[in-house]
Image 1 (cartoon, rainbow, N blue to C red):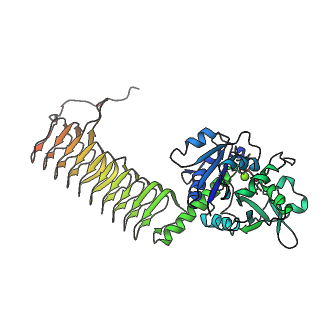
Image 2: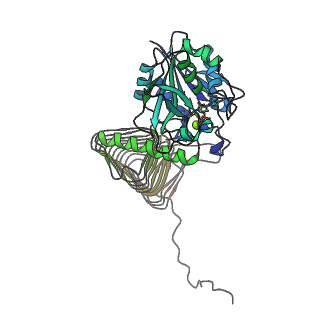
Image 3: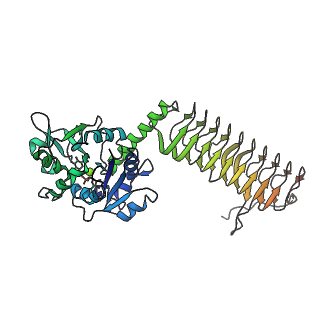
Length: 453
Ligand code: UD1
Ligand code: MG
């Protein structure tokens, strides 16, 4: 049996009070809609059809590489009308599964069980809500069969006391949907074509409507405002933390880690509080991450330690390295095994060779640094002449004294020593001491200025 997914995402999301379309608001660093798409893909459907409307161009542009069918709903006159717009894209023999772009936490397994119940007729996903206000209520007859869904705004006092609500997710054979969608009326409190009305229509035709009840209200929560968005973010992060701990990762506080992408961990990884991982990050065995680190798109080799308050973006760190505290590795930093990068050191587009050290207050940009090099405190590669970037090359076993400026393009050959305080603009030969320093003078009779009264 083939599945067609329809994701409803045309609504404005007025309650977000934002100019960004609701489904583009990020959850765990990804647009809300990306989560619904990923969940849909996990079902291996024949096609995924997204109904957009409000901010349609912006929404489409956010997913340039995906194999998706976009359908425009304009004006947005209800969830029933939205599905009707998608209908021409749904093969007649498929089962359609309708999900909402603003319900990002629902698991593929929950949707799968709904699909299994929706093979011969409609199936709705319901949930028990402690506070059901705002939701459509599930009306059952005395035998317990679902007979209708009544929207909150159309419900009677008695119906409003019902705790079983509609999550909005619905599965149904495509064949059945067409005539029911055509039969929808908009004579209701909101003047909209409600998808939920197909339940009563089906029952009137003698067709049974199945109900699957989700076991957690938080899994199927809809996001309508910033408070719900923040709540969903915490739920999502808690789910990731749980997963990491199940894989053996030590989290100092599972409530204080944020993963906005994919985090892959080896064995015996430990992560201190307030670490943020963005996009794709891989941590090898025995890696430790100190508090307040922000790491994006990076690979960290086994046994390395990233100390407090370090920021890494698109960096590769080898094995047994020590980075930080307060280090910043920018794009194309390639720090090789056993190297050390200390506090207030910034590295960009630079190879720092095996066993080399830059321990304090240094900028290394566009540099190729060999192994066992010591870069003294306060060293700067002057890589930019105002127009072009130039390269600094430092050979193995070189020693760069403190406070050195290396004016690129420049080479410090293997084993060379550069005296502290030098501004090096010509290549420094192998194995020798090179320094550039004005002669030290002492001025006798000089008097310190004093303040005017
Ligand atoms: C809907 C359900 C309600 C359910 C609740 C669960 C209907 C009529 N009601 O109500 O039973 O309890 O969700 O959260 O289905 N959309 C469109 N086009 C439209 C209108 C909406 O694409 O013309 C999309 C929205 O972008 C959103 C989804 O459909 O992703 C739900 O719309 P929303 O207006 O939030 O419906 P609710 O009033 O929450
Ligand atoms: Mg809603």
